[in-house]
Length: 191
Image (cartoon, rainbow, N blue to C red; front, top):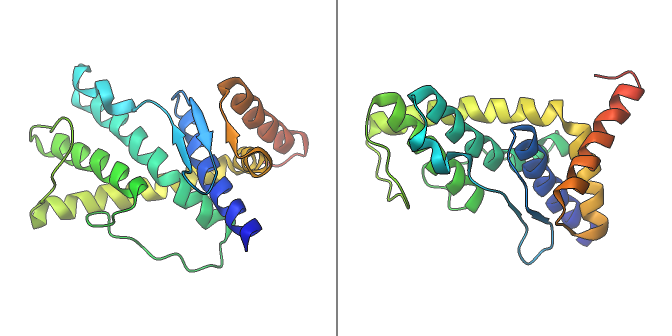
């Protein structure tokens, strides 16, 4: 079971890392060790409030949500026959869902013309806001699944590296692994 758990973690973190890079975000560190698996990257939405229009701000928060959801979608892609429960975006305590929830809450505020909270969010959405958040969540979940499928060969390549080495702290190496994964598909006539 240890090998399978390592593989699941490696694919999960590779999903975050590859999709972050594909969305133009820097990735400073990827760690697939059991004690603290994570991907360190700057938030796309951090400076979103400084952007000139709402559509641009939403696009940046969407990047953060997509990266947060990409790990779960990579695991779904890895085990297509396994039942993966649909988690509640409003109450799920896992860190990836908290990151996605914060971004989705901000997106929903922007879409409805409400002020966007800065810093930590204490969320108590009313039913209308919760419904809007669920709509955005399922749209972005589908988009994350599409991105994972499109970049699956790169995710697999990065995951194999993480299985062997546990960590990756060089963005150049990450980019090369992604590039090699995508070249493999092109060289073999698949798309």
